[in-house]
Amino acid sequence: MTVSAPPRPPLAPSPDELEALIKEARRRAWRRRLAYVLSLFVVGGALGLYFAVGPGGGTPGSDGSTGHPRPSGQAQEGQRIARVAARTIIVEAGLPSPGLWWAMNGLGLWWSRDGGKRWRTIAPPQVSSSGDVVARVSDISAVDDQHIWVGAADIAGDRVVNGSTRHMAIERMQDGGKTWKSVVPPGCYGCGGAYLSFLDVRRGFALVGMQPEPQLYLTRDGGDSWQRIGSDVSFTGPIRFLSDRVGWAVSEPGRMIGPSQSVPLGGGLLYRTIDGGRHWRRVVLTPPPRYRGSPATAGVPRFFSARWGVVGVRYRDRTRAQHLLIYTTHDGGDSWSAHPAPVAVDLRAYSWGIPEGLPFRLRR
Image (spheres, rainbow, N blue to C red):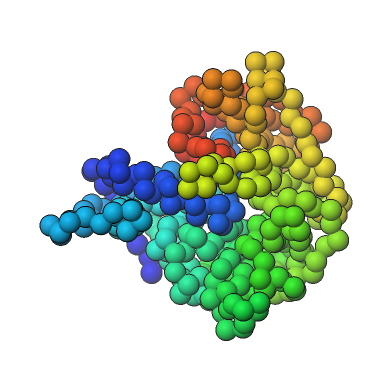
């Protein structure tokens, strides 16, 4: 089905509705183990850094009021979430390559190949039938409009393993989302969701499972089959491979603490491999003097050639104010230079990760 992007609602959700939605999104983010990722785009001769997540559009919907006494606790919060979801608010979105977009919430997964002008539903059947799409999908990778891969977790199956039929899978399609094939990497029926990185229509990597024993897999046939790589990887999180040997990754939080398990602890560490994922080494980016000693959270690097790339890093100072810096490299990641982001960037809504709703450019 192809539809036009819905218009933005004229009225914003109420503070109570937003609070409920944020709490639920944080819980889902921890269950799905999805770190916020940088999506970037080059326009002309300049670098455009485009972050592709934010409040989605929607049409005004009913506020759900029936005149009856309002339920309390989780039931009341659930009703507020349902009302917000009915307005087609997008919870996650991404830009896998120029012109190609995905967006999802609890109701579905949508795909656009024209920069967001028109959208069509592409959720894999096993994912959509399991319900709550955004809570099932851990990562999405694509090399063009026809070849898309989805890492999914906690989806319903017909095999009983360790007393449950719920399992993970890497969903693959080669026809723009019309048909899907579900594949479970060897020994990973009960693993968590997968983080994916594909070099082309045949070669790709998947980081699967949960700490402290994540597993790295390789495919050479587009995801029909996967082989485990002997690796010293000790983290889980988004991965980006530039070649068969060179790859980057950022660790996700080790655990969540605080009210509603909504405060992330750890994560945001940058790693690099130069031997196809067998060995990973941490990359420490030198902060400017004013940020030395401040907690830092890195995004996933994006490279536009073998040597030129960027990565965003968020710092939190002693006053708990947050600051975003953009690091650039011209030697394949051997050295990095820091640049301030626009002062207008708003990090207040983020307890962890990088904001993804502000375009800007850096001159070469």
